[in-house]
Image (tube, rainbow over all chains, first blue to last red; front, top):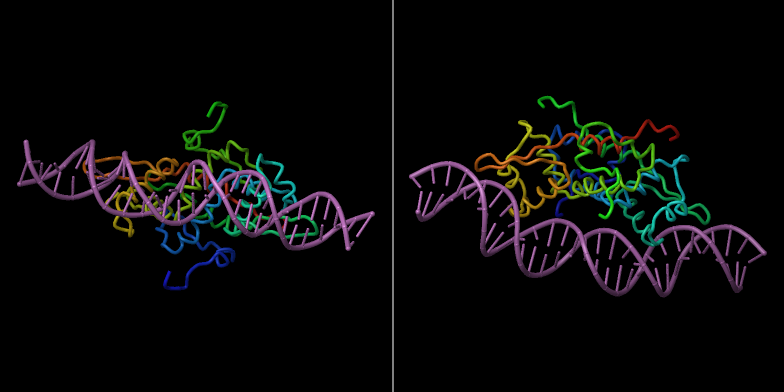
Length: 125
Length: 125
DNA sequence: CGGCTGCTTCGACATGTGTCTAGGTTGACA
DNA sequence: TGTCAACCTAGACACATGTCGAAGCAGCCG
């Protein structure tokens, strides 16, 4: 934590291009792992994975919290907490419009996570 | 744990084909989320993400624990614990040969996670 | 046989996480 | 202004997780 190298940030990661070689092709540097792991971690809860799915697949590209909350047997604050986690991980954005708050997915980071997991046609096996 | 519906399992998931529509195209059912979330969770730790990367990118398709352990400032038991987590998530396989234990990636589940995160060319944005 | 090395399991401990209820804060509307 | 609805934050609590040292198990080799 004592140094601040060129270091990646979530903002960089969302900048838009394939920053990340698939992990099956090249070993990830520690800093990259440190930046990307939280995003996977955020998807590592069934509720958040469903939330992410509902947000990412929303027809209008966005979805109201008031539509997310009743889809689960959980309290409002709990859903709010999970949404905060997704936001902190850089996976979604929130915008308040009047009484309601709308969430939308950030496709950039999703693409990066996907490309990271990409498995080339297995050369050997 | 009281019911056993058609329900997905990790074995099913590794069977090999694109079981999973991208979350940006269709909302994930709760059972699918429950099965896949642990895999993301396993990748949600920087150490495990690096381990996974080292295993998946190993030239021989496999790598010895004796090569993984010294790559981190962590005790042997801790690395072993993380490897167990990756194994439990179905992301890697282990095989003992003589004194050494070798780990190899399971490309099937990695492909599934990747396809789940796939973002089609954004229609709107 | 005895001892050594590689890896895992066990038990313990501090820290993190998911959930809740209670109590804000923000905006709409009469 | 007062009131209501939507959403978030704060505090609390049980449980999960990351880490370690110590101890166990499995194979090699003298």
